[in-house]
Each structure stands twice: as C-alpha cells, then as structure tokens.
Image (tube, rainbow, N blue to C red; front, side, top):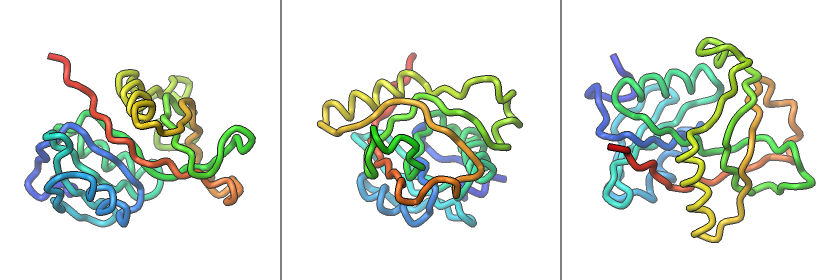
Amino acid sequence: IYPLSPHGALPVCYVLLPGDPQRVPTIASFLDDAHEVAHNREHLTFTGRLDGVAVSVTSTGIGGPSTAIAVEELAQIGADTFIRVGTSGLMQPDEMESGDLVVVSGAVRDEGTASHYMPLAFPALADLDVVDCLRQACREGGVAHHVGLTHSDRKSTRLNSSHALISYAVFCLKKKKK
C-alpha cells in the first residue's frame, strides 16, 4: 500500500526531501546509522539518526505530482515535518549568488498540483517554528543565508541556467509540543 516503505511504516516524524535519488545517500551520510529502507521508482528512502532522533531522507523526483505522492505517503505513515533540500532557480541575481542557502518561508504556487489541495489564492506558508529553527541553525553555524518566498512554477526551464541556486541542507528538527 505504501511503496515508499517496505513495511508500511517509518519510525520518523522528520523527513528531508531532495529531488534527485542520487543525493539521498550523500545527505544520509550526515546521519548516524543511516541505511536504505525503501526504493521504488524515483523515491529512495534512507533512515538514520541525528542527535539521537530518527530522520529520513526521501527523494521526490521532479515536479509537484511526484512530490505529492512522496509527501502524502510519508504523512500517512507518521511523518509530519518535511524540509525540501535541493536546487532552485535564482530570480534576484543582484541580491543573491549561486550557492546561497535559502530558508523558504512561503511559496507562490504557480503550478497544477497545488490547486488540488486548496485554491491557489490561499498562501503556501511554511511552519514558522521550522523556519525559525532553520534560521537559528544558520546563524549559529555562521552560514550566510536568505529567508523569503519562492516561486513554484511548472516551467522551470524559463530561468537562465547561469542563475542556478543550490540550497544546502540544514539539519534542524521541530520539537514536538506535548
């Protein structure tokens, strides 16, 4: 029923989401005891521990539909905090450089998949606790970063490739409120 997990459940709440399955082992190498738990089509999942907390890394493939499949299935088996890590187009070359890290606080939803969840007029906002945690981790680590909005567009080829922006993973976990 859940092709992302061979046993129907992952023992994690926190998932890092790169697009490319080839990035999963690299990101997972920062976790303790990381190991592959599932691989189906473009969705590769490794699980390990970070500071004693279980964390998974699952590739989403390209685009909204593939990402929706991954996130929906992971949520159905217990994940509740998702951090997208990967590349994005750069639309402000005067203010940012290729390689800058971006903590996204919200997104303009200009593609088809999002409209199946709620009207496009409804803003897509990140969890403020996760945004604050990521921003604090950047500050404490002395990592230059930007916080702001992004634009999710099905026409990703419209951006000049010289403006490619690579966002690196920052490991930060939302504390569960009891």
